[in-house]
Image 1: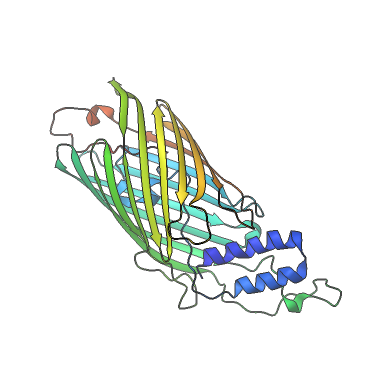
Image 2: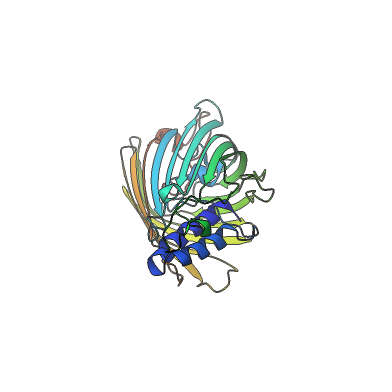
Length: 358
């Protein structure tokens, strides 16, 4: 079982069964989930504001939306169960002015409540941009990441801990292969884009990193496709300042192991405000609704600073109420619009990609 799914099921069991039954059911459910067959897989962390954290989405995005930027975000997921998972994102990027190269860095911290699980991963990115035609660009990127993660049995109660009256007495004598593990992960991606359209493909964990002591404790590769188109209603450029009214429908497809996910979101840009409404679907999933979650996005940009908020709510009927997801992001970016909209000149080496900023 993917460790992240395994630990999530553990704390769902702790949070829900503890309230509704008692220690005996907690013992039964927790032990069953801990020793479930290692055949199921779970998807990687996904942001409610994917284009705010676009370097995690596809390393080829590095350096395409700004000359340089720094971004930080916080997400609370599955808030209906013991306050859910807490995730912190951070990234930075820099595009060299006199070349076609860009570099970036990412950081992610993911942890469950009560210390049940913690994952830390950092990565270095490189992207190369080239013009195929005057309004057609190609970007290729790669990422090398290093991470550590540690699952835990905190909060679980086992049979040898129960006294005759049902009280918890001693630490369990059970042993588990739950030591802290380290891994190296590789990612790559391509982006083909025009001033209004983009099409991207990315692969994450392509080296199938091993994240546990057991032979089957590997992360399945993640294959993603991203696309979108910006429809301009009105745009105006003046003195290195750009204003627009536009609509951007975006689509992304994710495949990992036996899981498939389709995300569709439409953004409305009315400078300086961005609004977004989207839905997540799980193609091929049995006994679930066609739409898994719905989400809303709100972002504001002012003099290079951007602040955004994302809200995601589950739609599928489930015996376990996982609760909504909240995400907040803050970033600063430097954009030289004079170069982007310059009609002639040898130093115009790129077109800015039209993807959303949130």
